[in-house]
Amino acid sequence: MQPTTVATINFKGGVGKTTVTWCLANVAAATANYPTLLFGLILRHLKLRIEPFPVPTIGVFMNKAGYRTNTGLFRETRLYMDRCRAVCEESQKDGFNVHWLENYVPDRVDVKRAIHFGGWAQQYTSDFVNLFKAIEKIV
Ligand SMILES: Nc1ncnc2c1ncn2[C@@H]1O[C@H](COP(=O)(O)OP(=O)(O)OP(=O)(O)O)[C@@H](O)[C@H]1O
Ligand SMILES: [Mg+2]
Image (cartoon, rainbow, N blue to C red):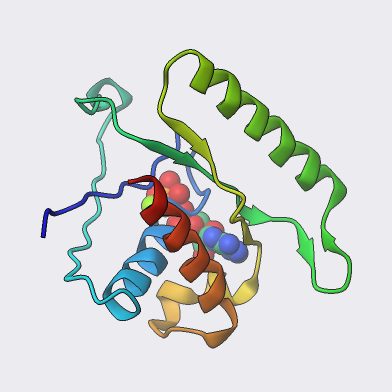
């Protein structure tokens, strides 16, 4: 099997890169039965930022989405996601292999505690299983 690298990136701090990576690695290892290696890369300075080559496939999705069980996505979150999708579509026209993924991860306290508690909570498994499936489709 060809190894595949999935990187969780964002220029902003504290948006959930580590949490999402950890949760996706759990899905990869547990549900898809992939041998999984998880590591964190901390760049000491923005000057050291890396530029992957060849330019990778990019999947864009929303973490910490404003969501309520009874009413669904917050209106402003939906608007923001629509805007992001439009930007992805424009970038595609410019030749970038970028995909907007509709699989958002809600802002949830059990996700917040995921790494800290070291467990795998049933309540959020489907969010990350679906996100992982969407990633599998584009890589
Ligand atoms: N979907 C979510 N719902 C609620 N809390 C979340 C979610 N995703 C991440 N968090 C919380 O947000 C905080 C920042 O997450 P995390 O450390 O993963 O971000 P990061 O992008 O890796 O940050 P850094 O730039 O410092 O490396 C943590 O407290 C984490 O538990
Ligand atoms: Mg981090």
